[in-house]
Amino acid sequence: MPKQKTHKGLAKRVKITKSGKVKFYSPNSRHLKSNKRGTTVQTYRKARFARSGDMKMYGKLLNRSLLSEQQHEAKALAAVTASASTTEAATKPAAKKPTHRGVKKVVKAAGKN
Image (cartoon, rainbow, N blue to C red; front, side, top):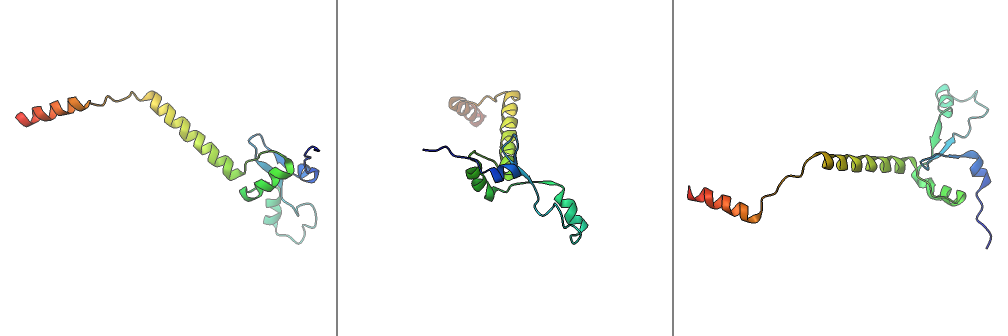
């Protein structure tokens, strides 16, 4: 069986970031800018990231697993909340829960008075 090859046309147009996001620049930004608004031309200068709906197609064409910007942000948020909960548990001492017998003794003592 032959090896899977990457789609060279897509590979030349996109950059895969360290976190797995697909970064690219807007199309229609090279020439014929005189009939476009200034704000449109300004937005062409910024890099864009692929959306989550396109990631499956890009992953197949590039033969690797990828993350969209939304998936990356969700993963980072989950990591932050997980680390916050572990540091909170490590700094806060565990509270002693009264045993079942201890609760009964307290109730009986309060009832006698």
